[in-house]
Length: 407
Image 1: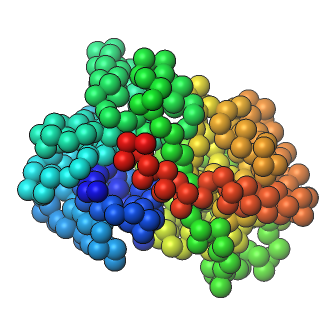
Image 2: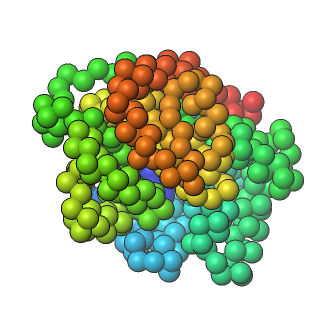
């Protein structure tokens, strides 16, 4: 089965960012007779910049797996320039991704992913041109999330976005939802239950069995100093709510044994660094972005992993990659979130610390964790076994295969 996959912010396994799709595709080509042709954008989501080796309008990229091929296509490099910049970036990819799909042989189906809805729209239009089924994967609820965050407030654009979301879901052969909460959302839109399949984020076996051969130098130095390391690894944007971490660090300045380490990049990083300098937070380290293959060594050397969900109602439906990353490496997560899909996982697995947004207890919970390192390690071990059993990417790849075959 030949699958044409369109994803504006697709990243390969060695690149910073989420690798849900390439990992699923690699497993699936080993389990069945699938072939994937990927159309991705020229910009890296985390940096907002073009990939270093990209030039022109279209460029092939290759994989070690011969059953996976792909191209990157031009997207306007204005993603970080406010609302109009994002729309320009989305619309340019809509056009170039459709053009990139023209010359290739006819696939058996087209799969595209949201956000953004324009990427999903590209998938639908290509499916109509080629006369094949359209599969619509939903990894974030757009426009619901940006509306709740206040990022989208134009009444006409909001109305159009909700219409487009429902239109795409109605036209899709299948809607692939990230969580049961997403499934419920589409049921309320009137989408038939048999059209909706749930395929959550997952964990890779190499992370589940990962044991670091060597601790990164920066982390080794902190360990040498006897630090209890609280780590955040992911995008550094306004809506990642990392101000919470700086507030906690400020309250814990008198506990030099606790060190906060942030790994990642984004448009809010410079502002956070300046804020940390002005508050003289010597207990906060910004390490910047790291290659995907280097991240496990950093997470595995930490004592507590922080994951912060946005303060919006739709966050109750989320299951973020960064939460599963921590669990897969045996790192106890501290999740700042309201009751929802992710908190139920931590409670069921007895494998994490939950702090509601309004509690003001983040610093207290971090201090308590630092004073109970063995308890934290036990939760980390439980978490690793829980996700090994329930969120193994190999099993999810088999499920994706059944979904794409119409099951």
